[in-house]
Length: 157
Length: 315
Ligand SMILES: [Zn+2]
Image (cartoon, rainbow over all chains, first blue to last red; front, side):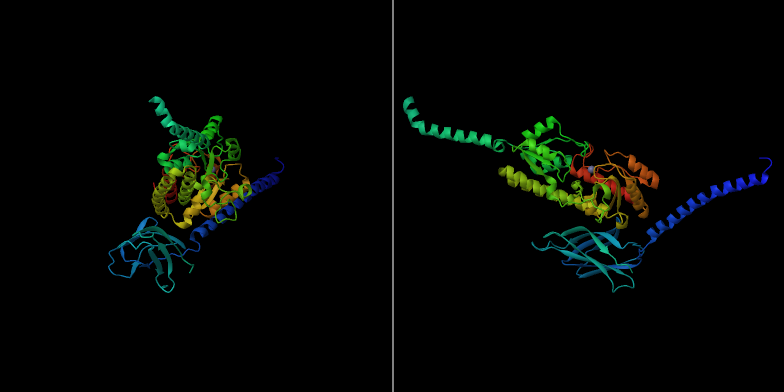
């Protein structure tokens, strides 16, 4: 060993090189999988800040409430004779394409038997008023309360 | 006088005798008409509750399986067989859950009517082609998910169906069974409204259910989830290839939590939790059998609360 200091040095360098390469390779792999996840989270979803809701009911409404992810988004009580209720919502980000709202509404009076009340919920993004996305939610025959989820599929913009 | 009296009552005695013979005959031919209540033996805790709700005071329910028992490994004992034979009705969950049912049916002969409550519910097929990532494609493709009680609307349909079948066997209480089913249906509607409202707190893009075995196909269809089970419908051996796919799905969709199950072996799920580094949620009642929830309502409320708190991070 003593007679070959250069060989010793070469062996040590080779050892470090071998140990370093797979480590670097592994780290590279985990780094390359991270961007995939970030991409998944940030992906095709459009945040909608500043949008309005239009609510059209088949029967006069006494009140209507709208929740998004468990939080109240809209409260309308005694809208009078408004045929269409339109409210602007600001400061809330809805970063999904498939959006589920929870809607609770009470009609002024129970519909006639055989009549099913229906409420149309339209979601309008600021600047894209010509492209509303909407859903119809149906109540039960003769019942004045409507409580249901309303799912809106917003096309990618 | 006595002689005259006997003579006079002669035809009545004959009539009474004839009626007695007819009555005795019908006693042997149709045991139901002679009993105050239908005797119903049940094969799953959730159908036990269903039988009680639909039957009300007109049935006596004998659960052959107690809440907490393992539904996939349950086999009726000789005592259970005897109870089933003496009952008017054997109420099974159906959809292939009770693998022993065809043989049990043979031993019952014609004296006990067998009803499979799950027949009323539209099946979810375990298939990789479905929108649901329902199960290990290698082990369960093409088979039917038997865990139908995860669908509240399905339970409502099952109640209507069971009421109709009870009514065929005991026509004198047909209206009462229909009334009970309708009444329970209204309660199930309220439960469904509550469940949907709770579930609406979870963004639709985050509705992934990582569970110990493939039991949530009906739940996923009803509430807009995608299922990532770690094992097949009856927790058989899982291939490493399938586990790799499951891990890939969990990572790709940034699923934050995995749910263990009451009565299920947590080993495979725990290794996934460790590998992926996600949270361990509270235990779900996947098989509808837990000593802490013997009613359908308690069972559904438990699962909904656990899922909503697990996926929203709420306490
Ligand atoms: Zn199961």
